[in-house]
Length: 477
Picture 1: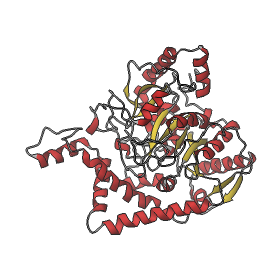
Picture 2: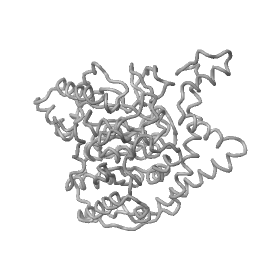
Picture 3: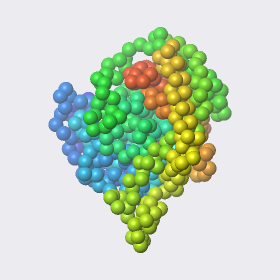
Picture 4: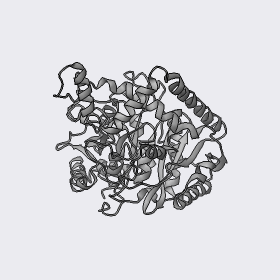
């Protein structure tokens, strides 16, 4: 391995012991070797562009290869969203996340696989095929950012961008044994990010460690006038406090969530990680989120409703797949969408359209919005006397491919991640152990716009543990 952290890789580039060309060739070779098995990349650049001139002050990301989840529009490169609908779409512009990382000298090696239009929890819903988990190729990597998570876990790239709507960064991070952060809603620009559910989608980072995530997130954050949901706040440093002590920090624990865990090894790993936080000086405080059990039901009304609106633009006329089996305009719409969208996307479009229709809007959509408000108030009350909330990421480790053919059972895998998404809070997943030979993650949730606290707590935990340094067998060469 060239380096185990972004700072180590950056130091080698800065000192000249490794050139940008050598570094790029190294990761290209790893992608060529391992991607046929993992299917983590949809598109790979044969000749990545040289990084822009060194940023001032010097950026630790300069010259370091990375990958984008394939829903970030990237100039002159296919942006497919894992869908047949956009399999040939070449974006004429860069998403803000893409351009900001380019300004820091990042070298994009390609676009990673994903559940179609970010709809899924297993990365089995991609037009380009399922992604394999590097820890066990017969198991899923999580979704929808499974391609990015698998690529980082197998060290095909040092880091990758990702998005999270209801858990699509945190769950893949947990399933693949890496660190992932979803910042507060509005903290990172959504401009150029193909929308699923506009009030929930947020861009973030997947990387081996919290320190790596902080370095990348620092470059991504900031107000963007091209995004009406972007927060117009000064950008704080999420890196300068990483080495500060967590002594005295109050960490909330939702005991009923831990008691719900049926897997004894996940439960033991979760409890051990909490003990480790106490050893670091943190204080555990029991908290309650009385409406959190309603989150999954509310989410699967709200997210599909927004999905049905956002995806209505894909009609076979303006851009995207166009059916050649249409006798009139109505048939063109119907056939283009039938051929271009996969089953899960169709299911959510129909659910959302139904929830927004006359006679059901008040009964379902409005009530789901009220539940969302109650959940946000629960978090606000909890954070009145704690600094960070710690809880499980998933009730299970990465499940086998094809194990969840029932959509409802798939949706329930997001039971611990959806509540914070509905509240727009920053969340992080970090590796804390193994169960059945597969990684286990712990979720840290922070106050709105307080990414620094969850990154600091995770970084301090990772200074005294080695779970984030574990690499799947066969990928540690």
